[in-house]
Length: 299
Image 1: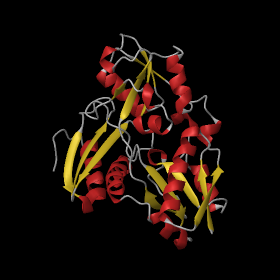
Image 2: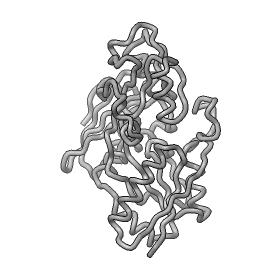
Image 3: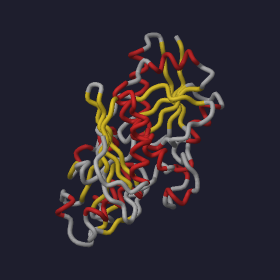
């Protein structure tokens, strides 16, 4: 029996995501056993400051990667949207799990939809991307900083501290909280974060045997879609909390990539289409268009 140690953050959602990876690894590799190694990250330790004030990329991933590199774990599991686009030396992306719903959701106190929230309603989020899109969709709403676990954020809404909050559909479902969703937000109104809903599984470069085992749970379509989205983010030279969104849809050999950068004066979404073997190039092309101020569809 081969034991694989899986490094993860300690939040309930992170543990649930690590369990999904563990189950998939055991199913795909008979003879493997797994155990969880819980790692505290900077983002876990410091929750009284906005993410952008922590002064470091990878605030939810770097410590997990260090555990992998220091041989305290064999596998590292991340929410892919939290993983910096600049690779960590010594680590390799061995698998992208089959992606869950990438969209954002509104959780509101009274079950209201976004259009039904009262003027001046307080909407919680820690994301610059979500904040910008709240203001674009409803300039009469007030975006309020919100940190903490998925359960904590939902609780603040239900206790009346906030009128609503925006969270990832995938995170709510994995945390067993799908029943609190008031509205799943249309990506045409709210573009999700690049790679939102996907789980990334890393291994060390010097362990090809472990890489082979992990590669068996890789989902090709999810890898292609997220590679285009993350290439867009990297082309913008933006971090994981940049005010930018991207969503790629793969259909056969073709990919459609919708992107947006929600800065003041931005011109809205760009839509590009191409072949799946050009997914990364398509993402970089999208970034070039956005940075150049393009406003027409490209294909």
